[in-house]
Image (cartoon, rainbow over all chains, first blue to last red; front, side, top):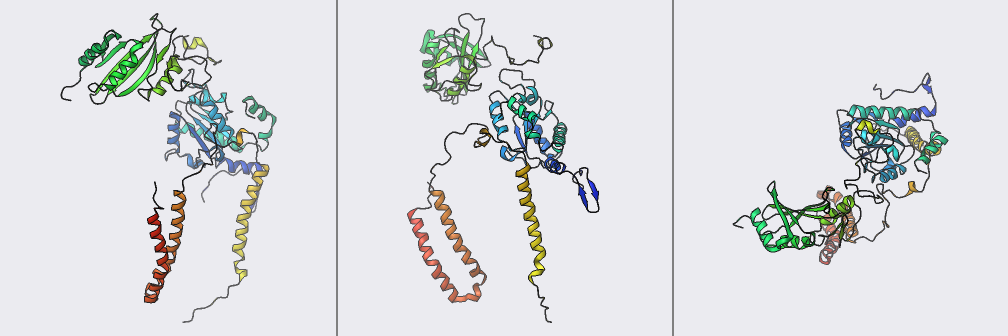
Length: 178
Length: 169
Length: 126
């Protein structure tokens, strides 16, 4: 019997288990993330290594990548985003289906990195809300996997009503995303 | 071509044809570095391109320069040209004042100059008369200044969390 | 040696029917509840056509060349003809001479049509 993932805390008995729906849905969502690799620079190459056989992102369920935001849950921004690219990134984020998460991989996506210049966006959190930051220049694949695991923890513990809560709405309006 | 086209030959042919429009000639890295007058640049490039002996049929690159210490001739444009038949490269410079940043366009001679001149305009503010579509290409359209001029800093002006003293400024 | 004939009634296949209902039911239930209790967000920008983050210009509905349609429709026609050849090929010996003549009678008008297509240049790409 192959153990695929940890079961959530359940009240078990003979042939049944009792748990909250949020936990089951969280488990399902966390173990089948469909990422959108928004790979711009060197961190994109590290991501390619992460998807390869040695570090295998597929074993976390994130095997199916898509470049269409309509079919993705996780926007992985990997690489330097210039100021001209900012609105494009924002539009891609807006067009993703709910629920969606964002991971900023690398120093350039987190804060502009070494490129403190007139043309580089100093961190994608200037245009979209970010859930997890993975520092590094570039981060090794293990660090990217660590970031994905943190995203999985966030997904498992997310409540159903988080996206309708006032705090979240305020966050979105602060970015100008209605 | 039995006789190879040499730098000396190019220099002498140019001086013969254009006389004092050629301001100075140097050689570096095996390539001729020629400073010419801005008014004659189109004629010179056309002649270099159409000459059957020299046939500089390829414009490799075109970019701007800014030397704020050269009073009266701060801005400049460099044209890198390449002759496939003779395997020869050449650099043409024109220099002009920052108060008059206007240069005639070579888009009519080489289509590739279209985007290169847009880049030069974007970063140095040099206007090319006769260009079909002169607007910013790499920076945001609403940028108010021309970034690569030496008076503007490299760093992003909107950062609030960087302490200048840690970065030697 | 007589082979035994087992009388199978419809009731024996009830298990398959139940399995089908469970599978379809699971799919429909999850889709329905995902839409009901899943997070929703409506906005104008979100519903615009996806064009890699840029603003889409113009309409996608343009007239296109007829050559694509011609190739596809003629392929379908002759493919159906080929489908009729397969059982003939399997039973070729049993059908013998008379079968051959009848098949020729079937092919002849289609062959005529094929020559017409070639002459008219319907399959010319440019």
